[in-house]
Length: 172
Image (cartoon, rainbow, N blue to C red; front, side, top):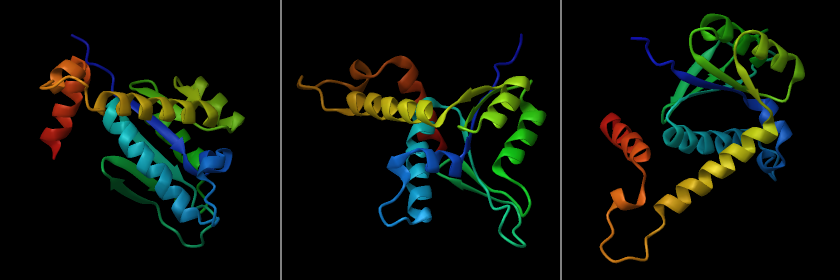
């Protein structure tokens, strides 16, 4: 029996922030923009059930070392000096692109071509924001209080969503 492929979504963080007006914080504070994006991705990952890896460039930061942290299950990577988010993602594609399902969100055409050639699929910044917004709507619809008295959660949510929520509950 063949094992099910794990699904990953790699995101070029600054590329996405720079493409989406929504994330360009009014105060131009890049940290606030990063935090807004991470917050949305945490919810998205919990709902969709696949691995989200958000990559930020630190290649121009003198002496920086690669740093990884996990924010409610979302892997956030800050690249090392002289390494771009694109090159980090490209390396990860080389490692897992042919064995796992990999999607990459970036509007950089060069990395999109690399993604496709290495067995992955690509999303533009615009496509990702639409997917995030639609997911947020789906979550809101499924969590709104039903008008019926005494309705159970299993009457509101489908089996797949209930199973995902149960997995999340067991992790906590």
